[in-house]
Image (cartoon, rainbow, N blue to C red):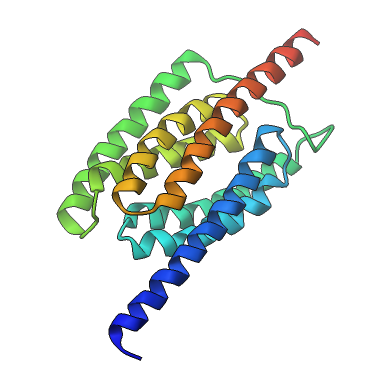
Length: 202
């Protein structure tokens, strides 16, 4: 089999892998909106598959991010399962303003410095877009594990930037997935705000 045929086969397999990962991602977010802990199982499969997709597209920061997400999914799942009471819909709440400022400042500083390092020392295709997405995704995932409503706001911004990046890197199914993620994140934000208000009023 010639090298060109191998490349075509690899590209076809990568396309299929991307579609499968996107499917698991939709299920993950749908369960997450309703605060059901089983979202983490589908999230684990999704991020494991996306590691290979992003690595092949030279989006190295996002590929490494998927490794973090594997551990973050396991950690978040354990946190959710340890909650007392009804384990199908976990309680949620907001950060205070001081925590928001510290969180955004720290993430921004890390993103700027890591972007410069990625641009200097790697062959990443879009380090000043790819790296901030990765850094803020880590922050959003941590907030999600601790059930803070602000995680949805971060995901909405991340999704918007990611859509443009994935179109640029010819990852159309993933761009479409992130468009769906953005819509689902808006629904998730609304659902969690409603849940928090109901809990305060109870």
